[in-house]
Image (cartoon, rainbow, N blue to C red; front, side):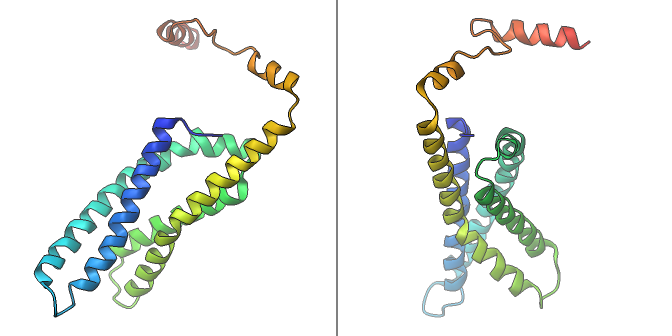
Length: 180
């Protein structure tokens, strides 16, 4: 269930921005309490990085929401890459819930725990994504290698619901007029 290039690149880009802003924030947060450096500069950098991280997280929520029907449901029905898919979804869910906790939980006793969990799983995201992609690509390569060339040709020539030469607008109008 490979994603379209634009969507895949958008996901990789936003995940990269989230990872970089989070990792740099960890460093800036440590530096702002270091008396040997300009703490004011690191305080401002930490605030900027945290704002960037939060904004990127909002865009990520939109992309993850789109990922459900585009990728997750189709792959689940096809019984493809479920283990790393579940791991990915669980990781993102944990990150979302701990981010919520960091923002809204007022308990100073819980905050360090929530922060540690969020940081640990956030730093693990590149490995989770890489594992999911590698297992998915390996399963596609295995499946393609085991399908006979005749079956591959039949799949490629299989009938679709929409003719290849039909203009997109005409198809949309036809579908919508039948529905009403």
